[in-house]
Image (tube, rainbow, N blue to C red):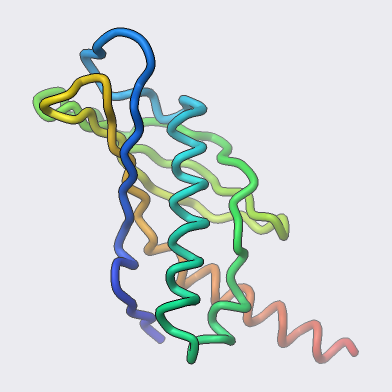
Amino acid sequence: MKWQTPMIGGLAALFLLTGCFKSEAPKCSDPKVTQLVEQIYTNQIAELKKSNPLAAVFMAAIPQKIVRIESARPVKYEENIKLRSCKGVAVFEDNRTANIEYTVQLDEKKSDQFYVELKMDFLEGLAQQGMMDMIMNEKKQ
């Protein structure tokens, strides 16, 4: 089942860097970056709940919050556009994990700001895993 909803492909957030002007995007493991990834996920899930109340089973199978990002690492850096592509493992409030991808990019006009975009294509697998867990728990009862 292919789940489609507005903006499921990704969501971006802007963050102001403190200090001097930067010449490259922050690292994938930078706490400000990983905190933004966590915030983007939480906001996106809340928005999905509001925008599609008929998807209650789907939404019940998805954790509401990322607790932390582990193994954050760069997979590519495009210096000409100051874009860092990242991968990591999201650990959710229910202890499930998912491989995630996100990007970090400096604002081209204000190098003291950066954007983070989280690719949400891992949601379908996470929801399927959650639905299977719910089914298995019902069978045990």
